[in-house]
Length: 376
Image 1 (tube, helix red, strand yellow):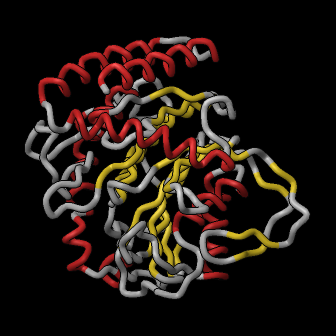
Image 2: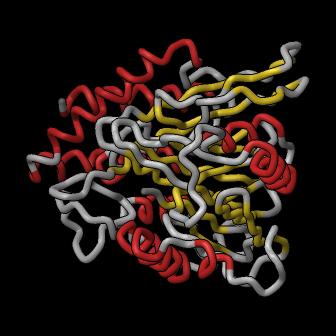
């Protein structure tokens, strides 16, 4: 399960656009960050997770945050400042036939779009041509359709799908998507007839209720509404770390934005990102670690200096695993966890006040590594 949200320039403190996503997957599933260079292509096909599709002549550079075994990505940003995150949604039209999966569509849209509107059209075209389907779980035989939050320097859209059906609405102010359909009749374009309630028509209500998507979406929107007009990066970090009905970081709940696998709950936040867009500048913050409540948001320039390449998947997995080991250790020792959080918060405070240059960013990454090693 996942949560993705955005605050547009009319509700943020400094008129920036801020996007965030918690990627909730199976707790043992490595979540990695990779940098994909801009590239020209002579081959006619590209192999995605399950199928090959038509390739384009050139793809754009992307930062991808993804399960290690999937070709596509749960979330990412490209060189033009297009940012996308996807959500699993449970509809009446889910297909078991292997085709494109939602994460493939995230990557393909980032590689092929210069703005959010183009990205919406890319995903719609792919959906109508190839459909969607296939196993999306790591160990589990989980299948689902997808919704997407698609953002650039000027606009944000929600695109929701059911099989090959789709609906799009534009975000005004702020919005959140989760593991349930949210578009009803408020779309400005769709593949269904006018006045069709998209959510009521296509959602499998019982599964959506168990997934608690409506609850978490309402919770996220409530937190954004409380801060409307003064939202900044610190607020966004805090929202991704929200636990329901308790600040106890040891409780598992499908109703928490920061999700923990515990007891019957088998989904956990395995990685989180926050992206700030303003005046043509892209600022990315990533945990590359499970549970943002016990992780550090590290700053990233849009280049290949900090993330791994696709050929370095093993190294990327080791990087994530080290941080997961610490999260597991801290989750068993509340005193130690609170100590870590105090030092983590000091490091993030330094991050939010630093100059955005390579030297300062390298220092933050170095300090984060020292912090992880110290508490391990």
